[in-house]
Image 1 (cartoon, one colour):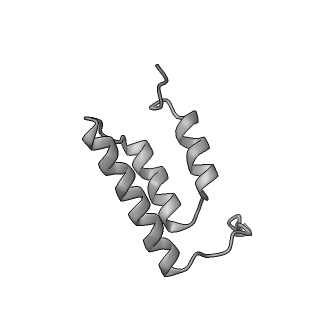
Image 2: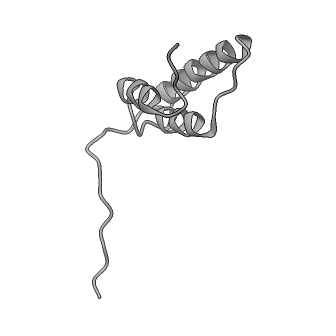
Length: 74
C-alpha cells in the first residue's frame, strides 16, 4: 500500500504580526456581534480560526460566512 500525500496549498504563511492583526480584527467583530446581542456559532468561530491562522484570506472568510446556514438576511 502506498502512502497518500496530503494536498498542499500555494498560500504563503502569514507573519506573526499579520496573525496578531487578524486576531484583533476577529476579536473586534466578535465584540460587535455580542454588543448587538448575538453569539457566533461554532461554524463561524472555526472559520475565524482558519482566517487567523492564514488558511483563508478575508474574501474567503466573508464568502464562507455568507454561504453558511448561520448567515441570515432580513
